[in-house]
Length: 531
Image 1 (cartoon, rainbow, N blue to C red):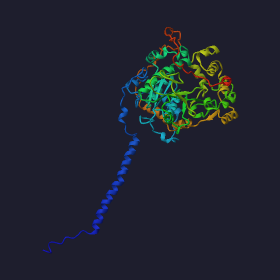
Image 2 (cartoon, rainbow, N blue to C red):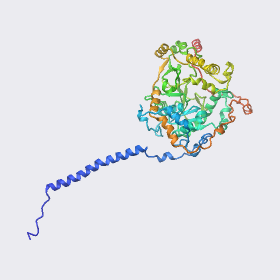
Image 3 (tube, one colour):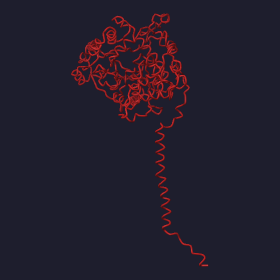
Image 4 (cartoon, one colour):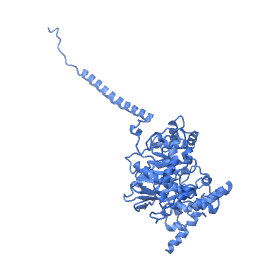
């Protein structure tokens, strides 16, 4: 039996060693391969553009204003959302031309901007919106819009006409998240013609006048409508800006408008941004936002002695210290009874708002930065180039002089006048005023917009709109905008509708609208001293 049943032997230590090392090898292999597989999967998702957020496709059952559903391409009517994630449009060759103008680069100076969708959601506070009435093209609007996205603006209400309302332009604007385009249709004008503003006195001094006066009323009516849209969208602050103005959030802990307004005390209703005016050094500026860095500071940000002591040198023979207006713009908390007070300010029907004026932040106003601005302003107004007639059309003296020159002089004479009155060619004077603080250099907006351009943000917006376009254009609402305007402030000031409408002849209960105003002059300084 001993020969049949061999005794059992204990496994050797070498068998245990090989088994355990094999198991450890498998574990080590799994720990190595699994992270690599996950990393490869994540890279593949990123390469494809990530996963689509289902929430972004949801529509919002919100109130619509006239003009919002009347996109020239019909896209606004296809969605009930104020801010659709994507919009189907068809763009013309003009969009590709604009893409070339706005530029591409393979070496962005702001690489973190590439692929960023500039989407600010509800977890960021405060929520800020900008409203604007514009007829500009993409070359001006896109840098303006994305710059303000970078510094913290999350919603834009753009009332468009002219170039901005053309299909190739509006298609791009509507495809940008957070942008609501409102077209100037007959329905919109009829809606605004019923505004309570017409029965109040605070804006009545601008009614039934052409050109700049008409624009001022139109901007105020658009601002009134934007307040309602901003409140429905959950916004906390609203600002009215023109597309030749950039907010400079100086004085904030970071270069952020959101940070700036977050630090404003809760009892403040409105924040005034004094404006700085562009001071160009060449007469061949093509892209003001990336070529202009010198600005003339506002009276509010200068010692009085410096301002008046160098007033004549700073005006350089022009009618006023600034070429155009000097009263900047303001931001308002969105609250009950808020109303516009002209294009520069806000007010409240039920109380006197608590306003503060910021000591460092400003509006950078790029006015008359291009030589073509002379003729473009002339072409927008049908007034006669006489001293008497231009007073009906333009509020500020420099605008009147520029209109007369552009309407009566040769191009050579216009160029000479432009260099004398607008271009800062005297380097010694520039240096003196820079040292005294009248002039200042501000580079941040230039750097941001150049970075956006080099990161292909603008051209990508145009390309994206084109990729999502429809094969066929839907009927345009261009015909809806033809014919006489339904607004009582149209140039046909003697129409039966204008004659029949009367401003209430009561005491002026509300503060009058703040018009575009020139900064204090030498005569004002004399009055201050006598007082």
